[in-house]
Length: 344
Image (cartoon, rainbow, N blue to C red; front, side, top):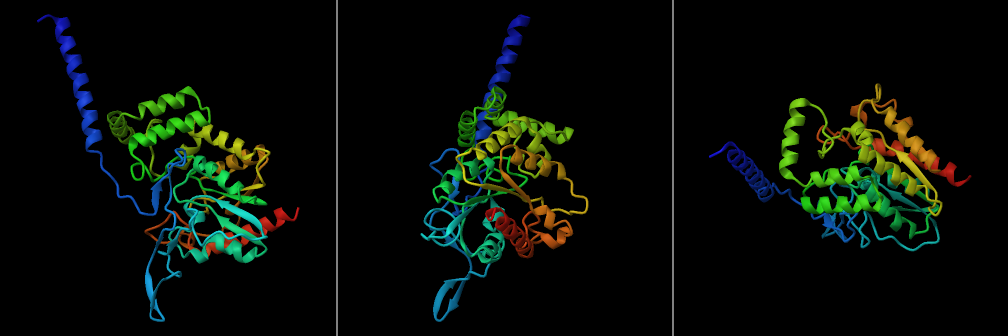
């Protein structure tokens, strides 16, 4: 057996081993439980959406009848349009639409005490419509903008969180399969006309074997590798990674379209200690993106600087969402800002 033949056998064996490893990784990929709150969307860019007419929570006995306890943080009601709260009724009031993620959704708090409902109390002359969906990123929220415009609002409040550039944050293998996520990414790249490098990155991400190898390399070197999905909260990485940065710029350009109603980009800081807040530079970038695209900007950090982490977090089990008291503070400050904006 000559040397060339041995090399061919070796290479062929390696290729077969790699193919088998890829097949096994796909076949035995762990599946996460899917909450009934979510359903696969017919809109490929959205990926997933809230289940229409969904309702859950603790039940109580009142006057001999069983009712959902609306004063429980577990109470969630989704209307027939697929958004949180009661049915969106027709009214002559001017409309303000909220677009956002789990923060505006009122995740893990009593919904009555969310900043959205503070706005309802403080701005009684307006109908506040909440279209926030937990887990949505900037590109998904851009799709929701189309729905928001149907209500002909005088203002859209765009609740921006520091993980907004990271698409499908927290939903890697739940409602959508891995392949569906990659196909969806292709559709987003084409929609936003992103660079060939972003397309190449997505094609490489289709390999489970490659991703698993890179995960090991990243853990050993403690250095970010651009191909990897990061389920954590590395906000600086989200805003500096080339494809994510490019995507965010294109999203803000779309937001600034002259055919859109007034949009107030409302920045929500990370739930951390604010004494030495580490993400001022990201806030500044989003402010500049907003102003460059003729959007209004408000930073809720301005009213939270004196708060400690313990004062704003929900609990030790949920340290990434704002508690009810903080929602109250934010709601009051935001209502004031909206009033100033709409009387101009």
